[in-house]
Length: 291
View 1 (cartoon, rainbow, N blue to C red):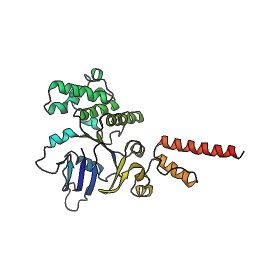
View 2: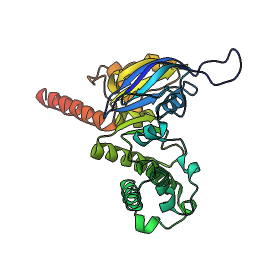
View 3: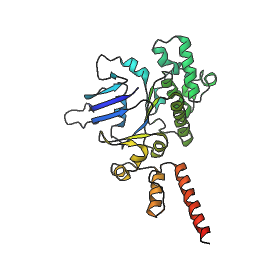
View 4: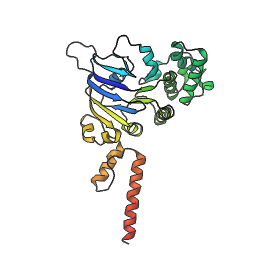
């Protein structure tokens, strides 16, 4: 179930001379990929992902999901949104039912699914995000912790069982443990179900750890796109547009400047630790040989 974005342009209505939010986006996302969309504030990230399930329609160009053109006025967007789940930043602000069970059930029930199917989907979605339906289900979502509310909101999207999951800063505002939990659930979900994940994030460390491919936006255009390691290798360009690289990548670059043989594509703590241990072992062996 692939996504084709072809010459997409979009401008928010604001009178003549408004700056385009998207200025000719071309992109293909293949089935099962984990793609991160990064870029400075105002680069068009949120605008782009809102085109992926028809919340926004392009002024020009087209977005095709699983062979269906979302710009076509005859397209059944309700059917598209069963396949493409979109989780907004601070999704807990969208909670509104009296109980967790009712909130998570809203989407499947709204599609007219039988009660037993709705119940199965709700239980499965809550378990996927690490919540016990029997314990949490009867409670008010507004009586939960911030992290639990975030997981309930995510469960509400997962209950639709989408094949594509689009997440706009899903861990924003959470403490480190909450961030690890929510992103860990997303990782496991992709591993278990093989779904496509598209993640918008400002956190370069998380992006380096999770995504296999990066799309870099600036001023409504794709300025860089490719495998995560290759993109983070373009640190000069990323810094020029106001982005950084993972701190581990900066550390590796500094070690190379000091004539230490550290690969240029190190992006995670685990990789850096492994390479530093190799260097240490190599130098210790050389020291013993010359002793």
